[in-house]
Image (cartoon, rainbow, N blue to C red):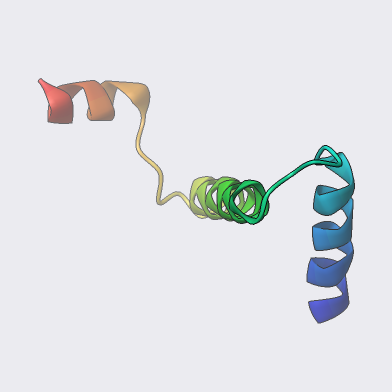
Length: 58
């Protein structure tokens, strides 16, 4: 599993521009993590439907 994370991090870094800052790197990693968590939640049924979110925000 750690190799997969390392490989994914290397791919992520390759997508950043040459003048990327440490803040850019941190943002990209956190964004990737949030996507992964959301997908995992969705796959296990822990997500909310659009309607549930609308009702919560209303």
